Image 1 (tube, one colour):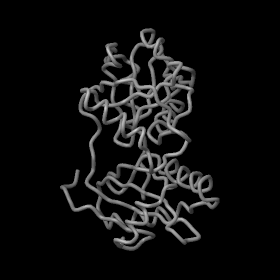
Image 2: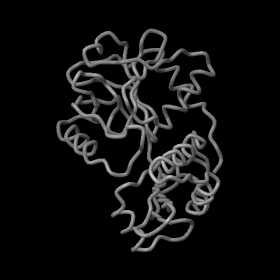
Image 3: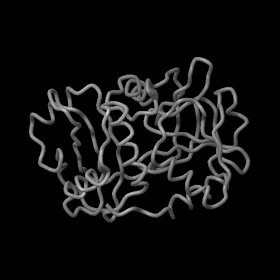
Length: 261
């Protein structure tokens, strides 16, 4: 991957001003998507653009043209082949239409070890949106980290698991993967993996998953924009990490096609 470089910020295809950064900071209804770029391409570009368009329609009543966003990303990358890219969409005070802020930072690698999760009782509001304000998820992510865990795992009062603070989770059930059916963000990496599983004829489904059910599963994995990792434990429950189904999922995700920006 490319060497470290200074972060860049652009708004609507132009270098960001301090006033625009302040406008983003003060915008309570923003949403975003985050991706890893390798060789000027990324996984699941269509999923990213569809997410931005749908969230803009839901929050602002107007869509966001995918090709326009794609052009903003290309301009902000300015030929940088490998990077972490985040697109924040917000409406500045007094503006009639949304603006898109693109940040370009050095690339990030997937987790280097199996992840340890701490369950917490929490449900993200409007979980289908990747909204910019997330006090609850940030609080519980920090709490999990302070307690020596890698990630927080959200479960409702009835123990129904939904998602992690920045991850989706799937459980290994024999020869199939099971994603919790509770309200959660449909992460892009999750969607890419589901697409590849379907193409390879590997079964997967959505179903309710409760904390009390976890001993009956053969393991778990988490995904986010950085990639995929096995789950070593949830609270005090140790999970197996060497299942063949995980290896199959990892192989399929590694072979998934990248989309040029």
